[in-house]
Length: 220
Image 1 (tube, one colour):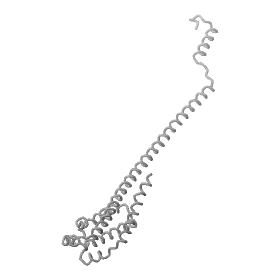
Image 2 (tube, rainbow, N blue to C red):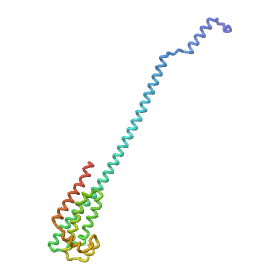
Image 3 (tube, rainbow, N blue to C red):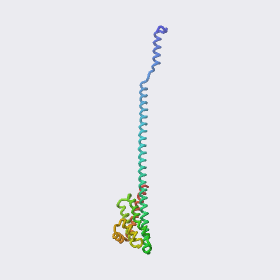
Image 4 (cartoon, rainbow, N blue to C red):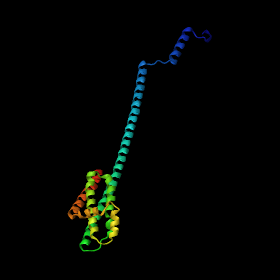
């Protein structure tokens, strides 16, 4: 140290001064507060992340439920629309056949020619529409429809038995359909009753009106 020309006391003070400047003192409480701040920041950040995940998960589940609900409604609307269309087709066919029978009865009373070809096809057309609509009706609801068809066939056979035109065509058509012999044709023709025919028509119409209205009301 003598090389610098400094006394020992001065050297000691200088060294002490440099050490004090190069190694500043820290308050322990400052370190503790810094640690607490860091923990608070991490805790807050963690809460934000968890909250975001929960919100995202809730939104996803909510969206999936909405999509599922929309799909279910679309399927319900499709089935309801299909049912309504089939029932309206059947209702229209039944109404047309009823009016046609009334027209033919009026022609028979006036001893005029009957539209035989159309009369022969009438029950099978109602039956075809009934089979399509039957996909949406249980046995109880189908019973009035079947009863009307039964009465319609009786009316048809009654009218065909009364006509003297196209006899061979009529017999050929009937014997190749559901009837196996002439006795059955005569028996069914004799069963025709105008009041029962009217009643069967009214009951079938009542069932169809209710069944058409019900799915529409359910979807409102």
